[in-house]
Length: 529
Image (tube, rainbow, N blue to C red):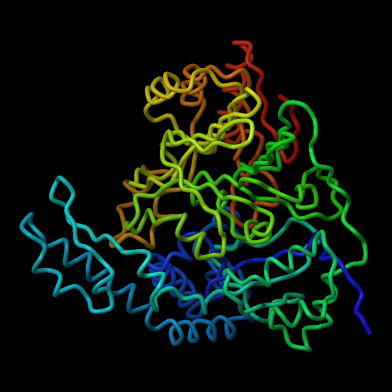
């Protein structure tokens, strides 16, 4: 008897996991993942197992929600201990890799400007053949990792990749970067599968094209005991239709944070895809159910998890034509290749743009513009703003650009002219360097130094410098992390007088004084150009 064709529900959430921790950029690339496992995950789990009460007490203080505190009660210490022991056993080579990176750093610290050739034989065995030893022009030595070789060898741990599925009834989810997902989490299915697997595409294609459930369960490798819970992920109800935009000019829909859908009748572009799930809510929003069947281009400005979110990208992979990413310097721990990583994750068409490179698209182009700031002064080149030109209109999606050097925008303006619409992030506080990059660093920074190097975007003064120089007709302040569906990756806790909102209003006041349309969109907006 044939099985009924059902749709995947719009509120089925997926969390890509690495060693059961929420997966992001640095947990995929094989040179950096070992450092986060050894220097962050293992240490958090060891601390929790040793004294879980400290973690429970710390998380009663909302100010510590983004800190290294595991978000489980003391009754789950046994499960965390089991995961810790399994990690140390199954990821033994990962731990050795991380130790080898630390040893290599110490080895290169002893260099004095003379030839590095004699040091190759002293490189830890696990790294030999995977690194080139180099100097910069100030005779500071560092390794360059051969990323493609690492992906092709035993250090790329696809067997550590898995997915966690569950139904969401609301936006609230616990913060993910300090707490692993345990196998026994209620109403959750864990699927052990590499992220590149085509079964993921087939599953999420069922959001719009119905199919039989049982073959899908089998393809995901779920056992018969999971069949009942898996069946609750599907429905006979068809999704609401999403008509293709066929109007004149450009339509832009704001999906929250830095995600915008830019459409003409000829092309569809989605920026920094982070999209809400669809469920009954009083909060007006666009969701996965409002995305078009085909997304011609997905634009990624940089690798931070609120802009490069695998949770969203894996769901949309079968609908995306081309992913456009910033070109990386390549080979450095802090700046691995986004293009290479996404190709390994099953994205077939990935284009890397360098600054001032242009990609022709129907009815216009996408040009990469310099993006400075928000990376704590690290030499990370894989960050770029996108100037989208369509139907004679120009939109600059500037992400978290921080006008540390305002004259940069004089030079940009000389090449691109006035722009019509500026989208600018103004999360002007930011966390310290160690909050994001600490596991990559061979030695901790002194606190005062660490606090001085922020992951922040422009404040009002710097935003004004960008506006004065690029002369936009409209300014929209976005990427503020305010939407509730970002709470599991961002813990900003805004209030009405939060410094970021105060700065945003100052920039809007400047725009009003100078006849420039401005807004601070929240969750949902639509505009036509």
